[in-house]
Length: 490
Image (cartoon, rainbow, N blue to C red; front, side, top):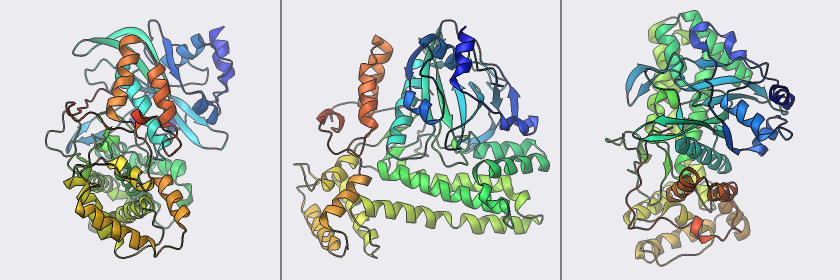
């Protein structure tokens, strides 16, 4: 009866990834969950991708999102890939994730549906293949917040507890997050093909990626070079977007970098409060490799690894292939800078490009760093043409900067109201403050109280809504609180 109900949800799953050579995946059923329970479900997201889940019972949803009973057309698999982790190359793969299939949305977009925490796979490398509730809820919150902020991202469809404990430092509640993404093809997937596959395998992966994400380049003279150029552009745009909202990914390994240009794998990520370019949250990033200020450069480093994997497809002559890759990668910094500066102009209400804009932005950021100003709230108050009694706003340097900014605005064609609207569209009123996320997780995990999380998710779905007045959501943490640290729990 439950299986019949599940099949009524219009899954219509496809499995184009398994058309690739078997090198790239292993057919893998999810492990059975002992006593699954659905604890949060993203009904609007389900509807947007064409799932008809309104009539499904909680039991049916729990069974499908735990992997206990899948739709009839599901043919689950675990993907193989490699990656540079903190600069060191290693064999990886979906160690606890199972792709149950691909769903075409009503608008024709294709999405992977993946269960994360669904048990051991051939790529688990000694791990148990399971996940704990806290980190899965954290991925749900942050990925949905990123979507609300307008940043390309994987999204969370559901979190289901398994009725079992997972052993970490202590015994924790086991859980599975169901996430969707336009694909899970990573830079590390290409590195894997280049290292362990044949030229035909590499070409098959590249052709599949082009067909899935960039069909408009199929007829280009050199479609593989065009693929590289497309990924460069998307990554430049994505990382600029991160910088503009103060997001720190925390673990920008090449296996966490999608060719689609979506943010994925929300492990030790967090949002910056006080503006400090050297901010690091991850407990394992002791040397600051993935600090806020390093993210643009790491993006370029990862793209160089992508180029190395693609070299045989660029040119038969290896020297010419390297030159081709270097020339293409040389555009990354310019693209990134263009996206970032354009975004910063908008955050200051500026629509026209002026030569002095770069120095205007850099001067403000330096003042923010010197006076330990909150990143998000500084731009929020500028948007409101307001200021508090903080050290930044009472400083002579800021008063001088503000005068320059107001003079610069006089060169705009937009009215004052239009400039304010532009700022409101680009300066979030709120972000998922780390202490608020932790508060929501503690209530959910320790007390089985999801009301705090649901309220936070509602607020985060409207981050540019300046009509919200709940002060607690835009206040930074108490200065006396211990520095926030994240861990690779997801």
